Structure formats: C-alpha cells, structure tokens
Image (tube, each protein chain N blue to C red):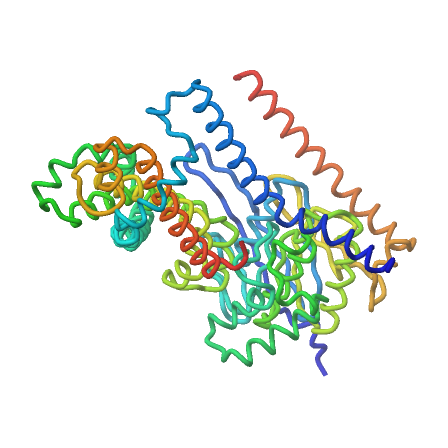
Length: 264
Length: 276
C-alpha cells in the first residue's frame, strides 16, 4: 500500500514535468479564448471585428461540410510542399556554389539579401502575366520568396565551419569533395535548417497570400470568399486550418531534421 | 644489435618560418633543430608566442612553405603525411557523429570495410577508456572525454608519430594529470613515438623522455633536457624530488622567456590603449 502511494505520488509530478510546457501552452490558449469570449460578450470588442471564439468553434462544422476544407487544405499543402522543396533543392546548391567562389559571393550576397526582404507578394500581377491564373503562379512566387533565406543561411553555415574541423580534414588528406560532404555540409546543417524554417514560413505566407489575392486554389481563396461574404466566424475557422497545415508542415521538417541530425 | 630507440622517427632540421612581407616580416620559428627517436616521448615547451603552434602546423604538414626540413624517413614534410597523426588543442570531435563513428572516421576515408573499422575503432575506444560511451554523441561527454575521442580517432590510423598540440589545455589540473596517466599508458602500450607541444611545465615533465625548451619570439631551441624519470610512469611521479628538480630546472630556463613574452604583451596592450 505504502509502496503504491509512493509510486503514485512520484509518478504524477513527473507527468506534469514531462508535459508541463504543452499543458501550459494549451491552458494559455484556453484562457485567451475565454478572455476574448468575455470581452466580446460584454461589448469591449466589436463582434463584427473579432467574432466570439464560441462562434468560430461552431463555424468549424459548416466550413468542413460546406466548403470542401480538406480539398482546399490539400491544394494549399501541395503548393507549399512543391515550392518549399524546390527552394531547398535550388537554394542549398546555389549557397554552396556561392560559398566556393568569393567573387560571386561578394557580387551576389547583397542581391540575395534584397530578394529576402522584397515584398514579392506584391509582384503578383507580373507573375500572373508570366504564368497565368494558375497554381503555377502561386508555386513560382512562393519558391522565389523562400529561396533567399536558404541561400544566405547555407553560405553562413558553410563559412561558419570551425577551422579546427577543417584542419582535421586537411590532416587526413581529404579531397575537396570529401571535405564538403563529410565536414562542411554536416557542420553547416543546423544553420541550413534555420534557413529552411525561415524559408518555409515565407513560402506559407506567399502561398496563402497569393491564393487570397488572385482568388484561386486552397485556403487563401476560401478566406477571401468567406471574408467577402462577411462570414467572420467562418473566416477565422479557415485561418485555423492554415495554422493546421503550417503545423503539419513544420512537424514534417522536424522529422527530416531529426533523421539528418540525430545529435541535435 | 642497434637500439631501435636510437633511430630517429623524425628529424627537424634547421626549420625557419617567417610571416608577413617587406618591413613587416616576423620570424616565428628560427633555425629549430631536434629529432624524435622511435618510441620516444618528446615535448616542445615555451611561452605563448614562441612559435609552438607554427611548429605543430609545419610538422603536421598544414604549413608547407618553410625553410629547412622536417624529415620522416626519406620524405620531407610539406603536406599532411599519413605517418603523422594530429591531435588539436581545440575540441575537434564531429558533433554530428557518435563516439564510434568519430573514431572510425579516418578508416571510413581509407575505405576500410565497416566490420573491420568498427572492430578497430572499438579497440582504441577501449584503450582510451570510453568503451561504455560508444553510442554517445560528443555533446553528451565532458571536455576530457571528448579529447580522448580525438586521441582515439588519431590513433586508429596507427600513425608512426602522434603529434599533439596542448590537447589538455582546456581541462582542469586534476583531469589533466589523470589524462596524462592515460597517455603515458597508451604510449607505453603502443611504443608510440609522440611529440607534444605544450606550455604546461608539469605536464611536459610528467610525460616526456626529453623536453625541447624554446625561447620567446623568435622561437629558437634554448635547451634540450633529458628527463630521467623511471618508466612505466604514473602521475604519482609528481610527488617525487626528481620531478620537482626537473620542474625547477626548466622553469629557470623558461622564466626569462615568459617574462619577455609578458612584457611584450603589456607594451602591445599599452600601445593599443594609447591609440584607443
């Protein structure tokens, strides 16, 4: 009996300790929702600007059954994955090439930095002319927006490789290809992943933003339509699905990172 | 029969290294000569700025452009040589590889089959006392353990000469003494020819058969001291009168050099202060 009591008392604090951050995060969300509910109901916040959270929850069913939310989430996720993966496949090699050539690096780095800061979403009329009102436009724009952080962080990661690790490689007479794949690249991976995370955030913003602006495709278009209908609870419910797609996206990235960098 | 220990494994002959151009030339290493016999443990000691690290890079083949010669057999060292295994002062394990993969790394480059390289890596990990940490990543190890991984990674290629640059500089004194024991034990077990670059007097006396004392800039050989302490040797030796005698004797040589180095850094700092 005493033994059971001891086990019980020792297991509950450890559970709380283990899931403490998740429980606290979830509780904060619930508290914030309740606070908004209260502020809207007493009239401090106008319900035509921010709907009460209870209305948003009720709108979920309608959005799911009437607005083909799964199909739209799938369309947005597809555009995001194509653009994001393309940004990685192009950005990392371009970053590696620029790292190898100091002249090109000095010539291009500022331009790439400018590309990262440019509000590419606003250039949508140009892309519409080039690629038509199709998912291709959304993907190409998101790709360009997501490219710069990966290039910049790849250069930064490769340049930041500790000199002593390079000297270990030199002392072992490694070829330049071995040096890249076995020392420079793995050493740069944490910084490259920071670039990928930034890039994927840019990609997500661009995909949803351009879908909204050109009224085409997945969740961005749905948000546009619901906002046009002045269905604010529905709009917020759709925004929630954007967050879901984003969470799915970043869990996927975390899995890939865990696979590539088991020593994190 | 010729004593194998008398055959030099490495000959450093009249090595000079200068940096800079025109009026800005600085001589880091100035006509340095000594040799290291097979199975011998030699330390090079000197104050900061005496060209120890430059010498380490020259002998390791990382600095190919120098005058004089570093010979291993009939070969002059001008690039990294497979006969020389280097252990660096800074922590140099690969954080993305676990202990066994770190140690097996040189064998992987040589194309050794996986089972054989794992066996050989396991042997050297065992030798440095990390058998139960094979699957751990460097971030899960202490500084001393990480340096032992680096040493095992260097030994796994079975280099003719083990070249170490202050490998325990970042460690506390007690860990340093204990790791000194481990190095002595490994060196005796493998009859490993070893050249240690250090600024630590007690470490040099604890481990060495001979100590090359360097002057402050430009780095010249001031004296070579034979250390006649019994082998096999452990850290217990630090309590002996003979150990104290050697430490005092070498410090006598080093004090003047270290004082010059200190005065130089202080005047450089005051110049910087005056300009700042």
